[in-house]
Length: 154
Image (cartoon, rainbow, N blue to C red; front, side, top):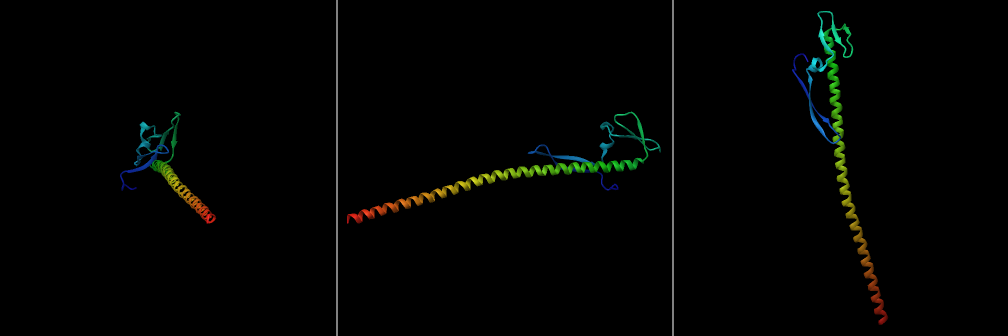
């Protein structure tokens, strides 16, 4: 970044569970936590002009690394930034998908309520039509009986 930027901070949604998220902030650059001795970093010290000594965590043997310290730091920083960005993108996508799923669940419940209302209105209208038809049919039969009775009396 050629000394144009002092610090880079990334703010992203981090999913806690399927239904909840939190806003997380990480410092992307400078990546000082890579070289912090208290965090058990792998690179501890540089010798005069002989290269870099890397101390393995589980063994006591020392390994001489032929690359220059500057190249190692640049490479390690690039790998670290890349891995952090992948982590951020993965968490962001997971949070997005969980938010979409929650929205779809809410939409499904809303549609089910609307479906029940429409179904109730349909059944009510259907029963009203059936009742109306039965009343008309019954009144038509009653008027026919009255006409027949009037004709037979006359």
